[in-house]
Amino acid sequence: MNHTLFYPCCGPTDLARAMAGFAHLVDAVHGADPIPGVDRGLRSSWHLEPRRQTPHRFVPELSPRGVTGVRSIASYTIIADSGMRHEYLARRIGRDAAPVPFTWHQYDAIEALNHIGGITVFFFRRDRPEDGEGSSGIRWLDDVLLARVLDKLEPNGLIVTDGAGMNGDAAQAALWKAPAMDDPVGGEFVAFGRSFTCEAVFCRLRRPTLVWRVGG
Ligand SMILES: C[S@@+](CC[C@H](N)C(=O)[O-])C[C@H]1O[C@@H](n2cnc3c(N)ncnc32)[C@H](O)[C@@H]1O
Image (cartoon, rainbow, N blue to C red; front, side):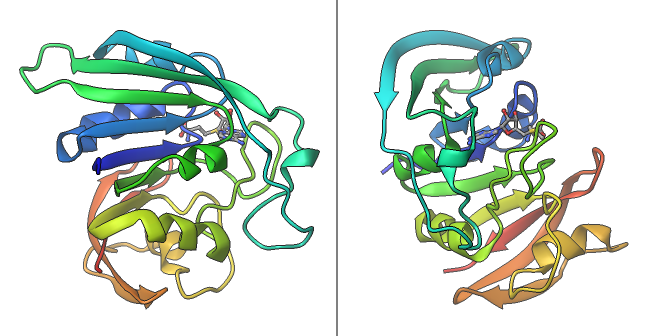
């Protein structure tokens, strides 16, 4: 099984920052975003050798209205029932490190998650839980989707997030509350039967992005 870095809703520029920080921990990188240019955004720091391009069709996930965490994809006009899966071999420019397979799922990120196993690093930030103004509206940190991510997150894997605009109380609320703390490092909580420990502040771009180690 691959040990992957998965960055859903990565946009055209931020995946390069995630890869600079965490690609050395994994043996495959997956980014998911239907927006054009995710490959171009990487090219200033990574050489991408194209491997395969595969049209991908899927049945959009139609969740019952009102279920927390998964929006109704049918009401979201950007997302269709198809897209393109782009596979590359990525080499960091100016570094001697081993190349890493990189897949850009140019379609819905929930669909992409269905095709990824063995997540070592889940990276998600600078998004909003509501649709509109360029945000995905995908509530990755809410119960339904976080449980799906945790099912795939390896023991002692990492969740790297700024909380992505979430609010309210939940067992995992520290994921969005701790970034506002002066010193979040060392913070701990238990949710979904897993222990979360804040190990570091990855960076403070816009909002602090924290690194949570998630025990088995
Ligand atoms: C606010 S931007 C954040 C981008 C990135 N996280 C960053 O920090 O630069 C939200 C991104 O979600 C993407 N998006 C919207 N709907 C999506 C979906 N269903 N699946 C994957 N990405 C989606 C948009 O194209 C946009 O690039």
